[in-house]
Image (cartoon, rainbow, N blue to C red):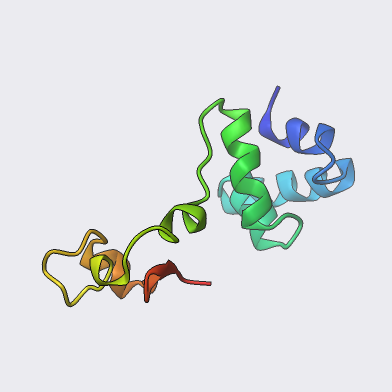
Length: 100
């Protein structure tokens, strides 16, 4: 089953929304999931676990994991930090928890 059909079968989007997204995909040559999220049909928070299930891979919600990490280990100014500086600078990690 294709991703679009699975989204419809899962009740995340309608058949008409899938048709519109597929038409857009033909024009802009982007991934269907990205188009669906960008157009606000499904949130990234809904799409991520859906895709994990679709591809039969584990899904981990990082915000649940980051609660257990000490803030000083995620501070980009700390050269021994666990969180890479590029991620910290991108605002994914702030004060020991993911960017909200």
